Image (cartoon, rainbow, N blue to C red; front, side):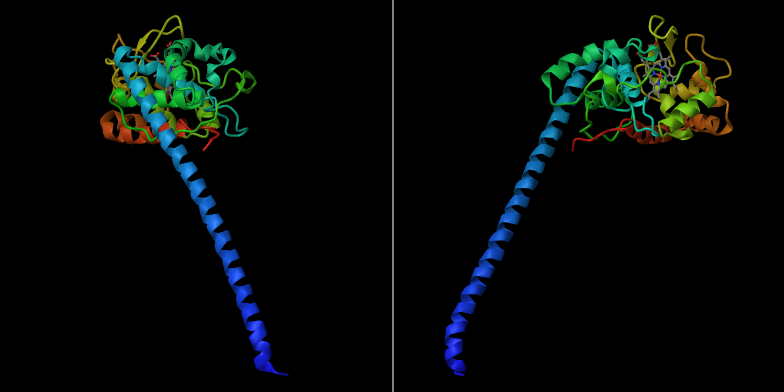
Length: 292
Ligand code: HEM
């Protein structure tokens, strides 16, 4: 066998095959990198757009609060959207369902139409933000604007499409509830005693209205400032006759552990802000289905 002749014929053929294989591998690699790049840049555009949307909506909310200091009812609407969450069935929670008439009519939600009406022009101008995000963003901006802690926030909650997704009435706590009932409700949301206690500090803002809940008056002397005075007031032996204390507020003093937390928050505003921000972030994401 003439090996020299054979190699003369096969070597160029082998080389051609190798070059072809290399080209093929190279072009597939190229395509992959290109596709990855495209995917990455689409994602980057989406992130930039979402960030931009959040920034613009935040600005509009601040404008709203400057004109109309409606921060308390924004915190309440967000809490009522979130607080229906059931960790066992994964139903309810932050899906914007509180915007539907059927849920608005639940006794606990009396008066929340005021918040919806105030947010309607913002939703009209920024159709891309979901109701679920809008309610939660309105709440965290309200707390920051009122002097409270900065609460970490993430956009992307998906809305419930129709009223059939509304939870049944009775998932939110009642002003007459004592600690065992409050615990049952907060545990059902997947929250614990500490979160129940610290989030009750939300009553540092706002007031009750006779024509909504049947109760009247603010919990603190400055209901438009977010501070730890709610805890200071509920601990006072002699209650200020101008201020409100619901049975559900006083319930926090029934148990030595929740009472200890109330005392710590009354004594240490920074600790309250730190724990509040963490618990509020968790509340603002209960049951969320994320679009990105
Ligand atoms: C622990 C169980 C709770 C009960 C029983 C309860 C009950 C109530 C009631 C009866 C009102 C008065 C509504 C009105 O007449 O306008 C109210 C208002 C309010 N609640 Fe709660 N709440 C609870 C927890 C929370 C939590 C966890 C937050 C926030 C994280 C919160 C935030 C507010 C705010 C900001 C207002 C004032 C709304 C306004 O001024 O329009 N509440 N709550």
